[in-house]
Image 1: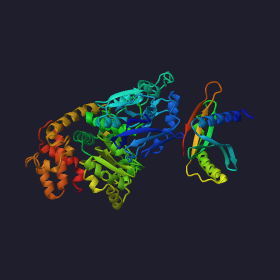
Image 2: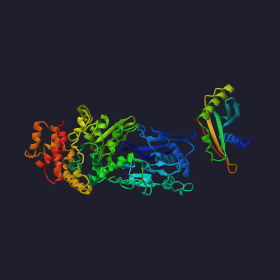
Image 3: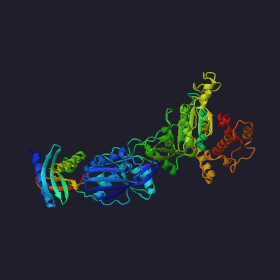
Image 4: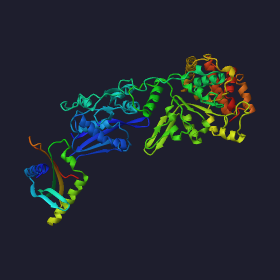
Length: 118
Length: 515
């Protein structure tokens, strides 16, 4: 595994713990389809949450949130629909969340959570 | 608080409006949106502000920033809003203390320095008038902003310094950054006064010299006709030197217009000398009158406000350009409408026209060398329309300099001497005309000339005769009277005598025969 994948993996672990700590139920991790990958699928009460996790070691190359552009956001919404189709589910409440993890490997990692973006 | 509020000024022509800048930080993905009809240069402010804030040590929030410029329906343009938006965003992020009613007008550099913008003078005037006397500008704009009475101006070199004074945490601020400004010491370009040509250089041409003096004294419009090389341009260039210094209000008006037109510079002073504009005859109506896309910009006529607009080779101008001048000659103001709104620019200038007598330029004196047909000559003269020439009080033919008048060095009167007489004559006019709300003889309407200021019959006999014979129209009659008053003012007489009237008629010789 390459270093960046290790970092991303750790970020996703931290994000999943974070969501669970905030009362959400993790449904699925790293779900893939031809269109792409969903990092975390979770349930927040009745709402389906499609969570994208972005992890960085430092802010030197910009904030993790800045890496989520308009087309990535659009893809996440398409993936949300694709996941529901694949499960044969109809989810009236569905949203896309983005979680930024800044982890320099020394101090406490910093997590930021944006709900219902785009 | 996720909402910040600051103030800036939007200029529409010379009128400024206070613009309220609101900034909101929303909990969603990073973005920067500017609302309120920004133009392209204002939309680029996002990138300037982000970089400037980052390089000043106070990076902007990593969330969605929405800046709203109120009133939203007023189109806004230019980079002068950069600072106000940046401060509103910092305020929304709680990085600084509220700034109250302070008005911010400056452009931001990527390194966080404040850059001067054009039009500071009218913008600060508007802010003070609207009750926002506290103004923050770039250091290079301080001199200009301080020209406005009542303004409390603060100048800053960098965003970091300003943020520090507004209570930002000094730990991260780039306070030791001190930009080496190329134009902040006042020794840069534009500091040396332009060399004004002197009347002492003009040899001979006694009649033209006299006409120029009269034109300067009474603010009369002037037409010089004559063959090439007679010195029409030379004479016209020397008219601004004869005019008296501008008063306080006039100087502010002139400086405000030039502040809009010129690139920002720190060596701005109140323009005390009447401006001189000398456009080329290929100029379009827009170049002379003002205009351009979006919000209209001032043209040569407005830049010549309270000064001289010299149109050399006047018949070569497009007829439409010349006729477009009729309105400002009448009202002293130009209102220009464009898609983004209407702008009013003052344009009370003294018009000086120069023209050849015919296309070949040789129809002077007996005109034996002239190769033009009478039709060509007539058509050439007709390019300057009657209604335009109607407004020109002095219409003079300039002859070629004769050998007798040429080559006598330093025999002629210098500008300073003549300007002194002009100033005295202007003062006499002011004393007489102030009760009527006028300043110069050129402004006096015929009603007044033939009413309160009526001359007795023996004095105007020669005029009455000319009118009776039909060589002088009623309008021409009024114009001769105006000139006669100016001649009397120059001669320090309280009322024109028959001699003044006769001389005035002579200055109108070319026009006496025309309508």
